[in-house]
Length: 141
Length: 71
Image (cartoon, rainbow over all chains, first blue to last red; front, side, top):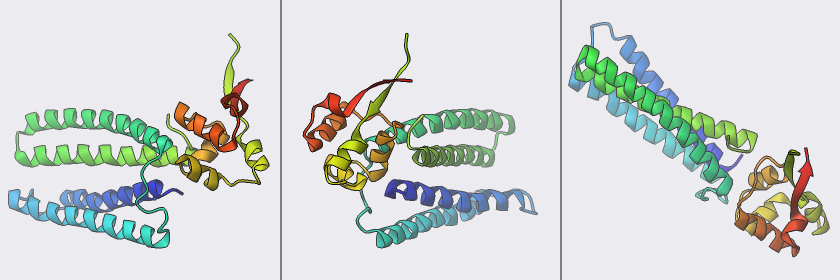
């Protein structure tokens, strides 16, 4: 497994764990929706968690295989990355369109922030997933 | 039209180059071992620049490394 593939696994895990917890917590809130400050109180730890998991994960990978750490993407990896980004972009566009429609329907900042965030996270996870699958197969497309 | 696919002789050339490993070849041409494996298996077609670099490593012409084969 290349450093780039390990990096995508770390990023995917970080996003799934942290944002999974966030949306699960939102869905289980007993006393209605949180206000803006409450929402920020939920989101900030998630951003911090994503950053920490990414940093710790990459440090562990770098310590275990120092020669691989920090290597740039080679041409096949770049092709895979472009392919995954194109698919992630489509997911993002669909997600944002749904977010806009949902926001126009409910007309609250809370819905706007969370639907756009969900679209963004979903697009990122799809991008990482497509990259990992292509790394496993050996090629893009 | 007959369907053709790009084939290569990298495995043979590595063998004749003292059983050069995929990682060693990758290091010489600036790609990962996995990319060399993907090229060798025909899963990934390299850029023209990398194709020339591979030929250069083995000291042969490009057409001795890559060619067409019937599907």
